[in-house]
Length: 240
Ligand SMILES: [Mg+2]
Image (cartoon, rainbow, N blue to C red):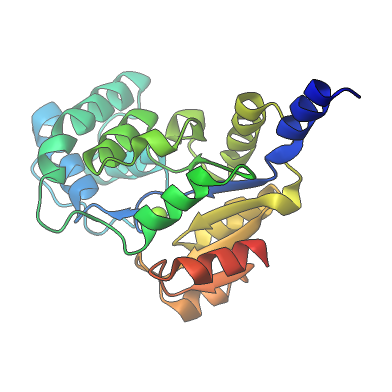
């Protein structure tokens, strides 16, 4: 092989590790913006004033959550209502994100920047957010541009169905196959761990969402960190 070919070949095979990130409770805390935007939209779209704090959002997809909202308030489960409600949610979201508790979680900026600088690391999203909602949440903190691809609630209502979409888009974007053992699903709930296991990925769980270490450990993630505040600990888990 000539040098140019070797370079191409080297470049082609240089990306090996795929990081698939959850958003809420992992990269950012929205300070309750997601729930308050859904509550706001419930009033704006359906004229219903009600609380959603008895619905367990964590680790679920937006469509899964909306189905529970419709059940709670007796609203017809139609595609039209899904569309109207999710549009209302997305319209309400920016104002709700502008709250003082919305923040990027510790260490996240440093890890994302370091991952972007590594030729052997690719990163995308694996999130229950709609793609449009993910963009609003991450762009609010200047993080959206780190993620050229992802899997979202638009791809399926069940989180366990999303992994294959993320891996396929990673393959299409980078032009390489990622071995399952080199794929990491990073999240803050048992649902993240489960959806990583479905695709044979390794899983890294963090306790920066609602779940304690003991609850996450019961689901046997590959690695478990209290938070991402120490980038060295994160890379030690990933690189071994
Ligand atoms: Mg989460």
